Amino acid sequence: MEGFEENFQVMESEQLGRFVVAKRDLTRGQQILLEEPYVTGPYWDADVSCLNCFRDSCSTCQQCGVAPLCYDCTNHDEAECSFYRMSGLDRHFLYNNFNVVMPVRCLMLHRSNRERYDEIMTMESRLEERRGTEIWDIHEKFVVKPLIESGMFVDKLDDLEVTGELLQRICGLLDANTFEIRGNVDSRGSEKGYLARGLYPKTALMTHSCMPNTLLSVDGYSNVRVFTTYPVKMGEMLTISYTRSLFGTYDRQTHLRKGRYFICNCRRCNDPTELGTHLSSIKCTECDGGLCSFYTDDPRWECNKCHKLLKREYVNEVLCAARDDIMICPLEVRDLERVINKHSKVLNPHHSLIIEAKQTLLGEFKFICVSTDPMAVPKPVLRRKFELCEEMLLILRFLEPGLSRLVGIAMYDYHVALIELSRRNFDTTEIRSHELLDNLIKAEGELKQAINMLLFEHHSTPEGQLVKRAMRELKELRAEISVVRAMIEDENLEGQNRNQRSGNGNSNNNYKIKFGKRR
Image (tube, rainbow, N blue to C red):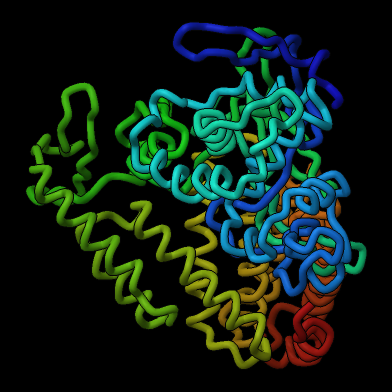
């Protein structure tokens, strides 16, 4: 582990428990921590997967006879394999009770690395808050009961007695403190593994904020790297986000309350307009242009223009209808557009539910552009794709003003959409060469910013691979800009009075021949 002693100072309060502040001034984009996971494993309720790499399972370990493996993996952790081999489990036990994998791996630390075991047991588990709740009963059914009834812990694990209370505590700390490990990319450029989770005790000390000052990147070895998103002063609390930026306040708070048992009081959560993005606001039924936001101090839905108060029953009805429509909407452009238009009349075009549908629609347009010959893609598709990219980028820049993975990806998508639309508009003479040049230069600026946003990503991650592709495309884009500049110079030499269409003929054709195909 690198960086913790130099950059982090552990504090404690009655309200927050243990948390960390910056031990010194930190610059934007600085790597302040590199930590390896104490435990990795599948997500809760995940499909059965290989215990070694988390790909789909298609075989069973020949040594222990119970661990699921994939075609490429012939073994898994030696101590884990030995433990399962000595436990006398039925060969179908893990296939039928896959949720026990992470708790068992935590327990095994008691034998293999007592110091790490003791450290994770100091982590917050919210045990008392969870006791008797639905999630407690779920863990009781799918973890505690199978493990206790299996008899694998009849003999103490060294001097550790494995009880239902201990298992519930471990389940709680896993729920509250693990981080996502997304599919990495192997040396051949193919995706390696599926979603998993890792337990990082030092990283987990950071407090949640919906506008955090740090971000995480997990490399190909499941090590987490923590970077600052903007300059952090000595003594400032170090924060991280456990929620999605484009979720509205209600959905973020629900996620935190149910999954991690706390309520966020960050600047964004305390602003009814969510920093002016109105991701949770709905249209006023009384005035034009008014948006009703929820105020928590005196619970109410109030218009920002005429101050009309909406009844909660009406708001709940509107939100439930929109959520139901979006969830069941087919992944077809026409259906998505219908749902977006329908509910934008009552919510607002930037409501998080509408944004969710627009993200899905954008994905459909991106698929169309990738799978279709560039010249065969209908112009309305290119135009709508560009509008959606522009809208997503505008919102994300408000919500994540510092270093941001999401903003970097959005910038990349925006630059692609801008180039695609500009090329087509030039081909159909809707814009002239100097307008094409302006758009290409603008796209170049967005692409450079996207690369700068994503440079912190490890090369083994999908975003790291995107950076490599973006760098190649930046070189190609600069070559394209040079060609357009030369084309403009040729046009100027031909004189101002020459017919624009015939004057553009040869240079226009040369441009289409060179850059008409997708990069």
